[in-house]
Amino acid sequence: MNCFAAYLKEVPMGYYVMLRFARDGRPKPVMGEGDKPIVYRSKLEATERALQDLLAYMNTEYLRCGETASAARTEAEKLFPTLQPIRKNGKVIQVERKKAAA
Image (cartoon, rainbow, N blue to C red):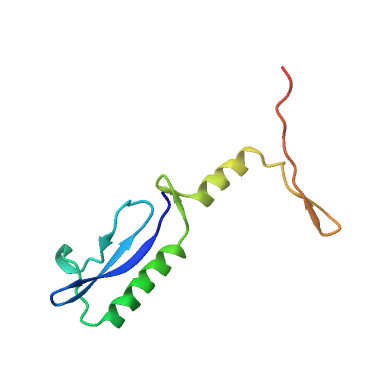
């Protein structure tokens, strides 16, 4: 499901930072040069990296099947340029187009 996780995995020389994003389905270590997991010497250093990477992912624009959600909305709004929300006395009234009866 849409689960996210960041945790530390203790290894002989220190700690791996393991990150799980919804798109992956399983946790993966933070990789360094040569596609090898980065080993952090201290628990604090590893925790800071886990937090940094998880927040960076959460604060990016969400993707949907390889494209951003805002791109899909922009394309949809191009199809109906005359449909704009009506603003009256500070309230927004949404305008919807209903399918015509056959």
